[in-house]
Amino acid sequence: MSPLTFATMAGVLLLASLLDLLWRRLPNPLTVGAALLAISLSLWQGGLDAVVQSLLGLLLGFVLLLPGFISGFTGGG
Image (cartoon, rainbow, N blue to C red):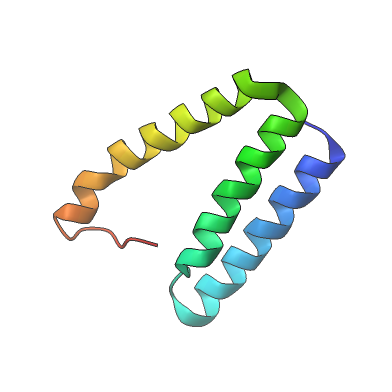
C-alpha cells in the first residue's frame, strides 16, 4: 500500500470515527465520498482491473449488509 493510500484511508477513518463518536451517525456524503475516493485511488494505482475489483467489492458489501438494513437491525450510514 502506498503512503498516499494509507494517509487517505487513515484520514477518512479518523473523520468517520470522530463523527460517529460525536453524533452517532455517519453522513451519506462522507460514505459516498470515501467510496468515490477509494475507486479513484484504485484507478490511479492499479488501472481498470483494480477499479473492477473495487466495484465488485463494493457490490458484495452492499449485498451482504442489505438484509440487516431491510430488517431494521442496522442503519444505512
